[in-house]
Image 1 (cartoon, rainbow, N blue to C red):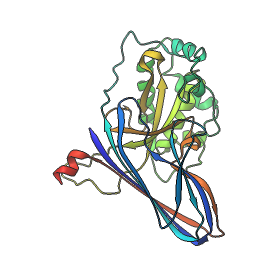
Image 2 (image 1 turned 60 degrees about the vertical axis):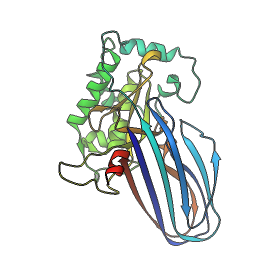
Image 3 (image 1 turned 45 degrees about the horizontal axis):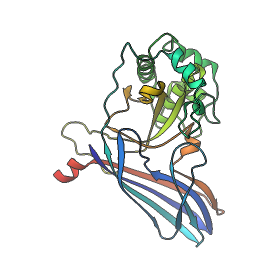
Length: 297
């Protein structure tokens, strides 16, 4: 499947912003099962961009500098992505969780996606004994890694309620866990907390998921949003396997990986410093359209 993605972020400021220096992680990465065929970034009304190095995680980073006073700023990224990713199938030959944990501890892969980098708590995903106990019910060390991973993702999907008003971007996993509600970021962080507590390498994936409207209803432009899910390392043969606890499904042909890190802070789509004395308002619009839908239109 080929997708065209349009991601627009608009900032409106209460007063003039004289200077801003931001990191943009809006260009999807090449990842197993997906290839970036085209990408374009525009910033209006002003802005200078240059490539930058990812300080953590795996991301394509662009540095944006604004040094002309502005009252609003629109950042638009467009990408065309080819996705060809099969749904994983658990098998009796899969390594157990105990074997995965041991292989991760002994891994010498020091790259941005080496499993040892994702074994320990991170600033936004600390150790939590309550979450660890909850997740442990599905994480018997003798259980196959893929079987256990999807079982935990599906239990989180059953036990938690999606509620866009329940949490904020900085809500800690413990609070979302106590209330059993939140958004995709919360569900991913809860699952990662439990996996890491069990000694397993788990990463935070940021990206997009294709949304399919109800029968007879048109796809709403701008109705999509960025999505978050979990990557579980299942040994050198299987590698990183995606699990979506918000929907209780595998990462497959409807998921597009934008960036991978230990938690959201490492791979936020936009972050940085803005010099101004007034409040700001941010609006985000995302469209994920299969190419066949565009041709039919």
